[in-house]
Image 1 (cartoon, helix red, strand yellow):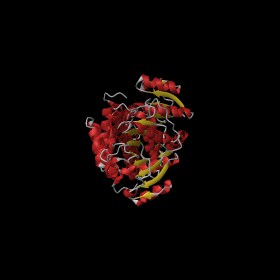
Image 2 (cartoon, chains in turn yellow, cyan; image 1 turned 90 degrees about the horizontal axis):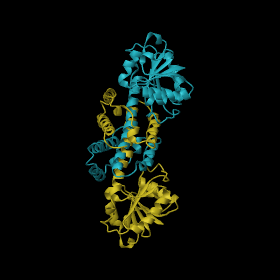
Image 3 (spheres, one colour; image 1 turned 90 degrees about the vertical axis):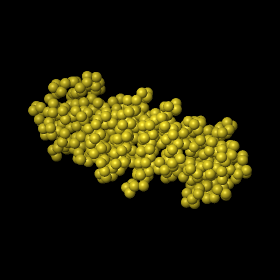
Image 4 (cartoon, helix red, strand yellow; image 1 turned 30 degrees about the horizontal axis):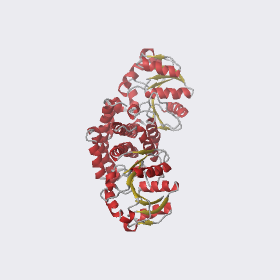
Amino acid sequence: MRIVLIGAGNLATNLGRALKEAGENIIQVYSRTEESASALAARLDCPYTCSLETVSLEAELYIVSVKDSVLSDVLVSLYTPERADALFVHTAGSMPLSVFDRAGIGRCGVFYPMQTFSKLRPVDFVHLPVFVESKRQDDLPLLRSLAVELSADVYEMPSEKRRYLHLAAVFACNFANHCYARAGQILQEQGIPFDVMLPLIDETAAKVHGMSPREAQTGPAVRYDRNVMERHLELLNENTDAAEEYELLSRGIHALRHSGDTD
Amino acid sequence: MRIVLIGAGNLATNLGRALKEAGENIIQVYSRTEESASALAARLDCPYTCSLETVSLEAELYIVSVKDSVLSDVLVSLYTPERADALFVHTAGSMPLSVFDRAGIGRCGVFYPMQTFSKLRPVDFVHLPVFVESKRQDDLPLLRSLAVELSADVYEMPSEKRRYLHLAAVFACNFANHCYARAGQILQEQGIPFDVMLPLIDETAAKVHGMSPREAQTGPAVRYDRNVMERHLELLNENTDAAEEYELLSRGIHALRHSGDTD
């Protein structure tokens, strides 16, 4: 399939690499900045452009992977009569299918690989869940088959549900990673290398494969050991952001432990 | 070495198992509750007691692994003249060596395996960092050699520094796990299985082996994408605890990104 990638950020870079490895024909890369466009084009061995006006008309599929805040405008610029037969997808977990409406795009869908991507770290797609959705039912098999080329875990999911998925991913990934970052900050101030945390971080992640996070919880907050918690807060007396997080998350752990939810 | 385990909780259960596998001679287990004492004793094939008064006098090493809040009292009960020659250690990351002072224990130390332990999940000790400390310098080789039997990563660390380590561990483990739990709560309400999060959770953990958590950060908060963040908060309008965490952690991510700390 002839594909144009609109965007050359973390997700587009990893998705482009995976599509090329799967044998797809990426005919062009667009990015607003020449640096990103040329870097990804070099990796994918294809031409690039930094102007939406010179994006190729030849693609069967346009994968639009740009910041959520500019997505709608990019679609409006991109959708010209010459492209009426092409299929357009975006890759944003939090954006509904209706974002295509303003541009009047008929054949459209969502192709959301749920992962944390960084340009310099190639991600293995084999067990990466990909969530697909399309406006027209007959475009779904195409998106499904493209996703299946990359991953064994492909799901159809409507926008309404996907936005909760994306929200959950922010907690499980971005916020968990922020907790790592706070640990790093505390260790750095003591001259202790971050690497001593890695076995603990790995086990914390591995543990929830076999039990629910609520069952897996340990530490002073779940025991509500006030002595330990107060000593910890004293250590954070010059880091008010971290102290506020410590208090709120400890309360959250305790509340979740005693809530009526089932595991 | 003849060892008595005082305590039969998550840590004692895993440590006891690892010591036995390393060929150490665990001669008795004590726990306040018969259920815990008998379960661990059965696993370690040794006798147990539920009374501190009948704890064996024959041990060379007493490993005291009880709740921080009762540790000092347990030490006072345990330290009788017949045990003046034995070595006593506790396993609590947050407790200083000085906790032994009230009981007047001369030969004492700390043996802190930094990990999240649950009774039913056996943990591999090989790459689990163990932090040791002793009051008398000549007891350190014994603690070191015991730790080395279990783990390749043994460090000497004074109490003053270890408490920061323990605080960092609460962030990297307990608070990160709480973020998983929130994700689980959100997914459960939508009928989406938690397992779809596992590749993301694993990659988030794996990523910080190669880059700092600050470099690894992705998502709406680090981009400060207000549109996405506001839509997420709308989804949480009936879960005020989660909404408060969302706001605070997003601000924290943004602040850490733009702080003067080096990665």
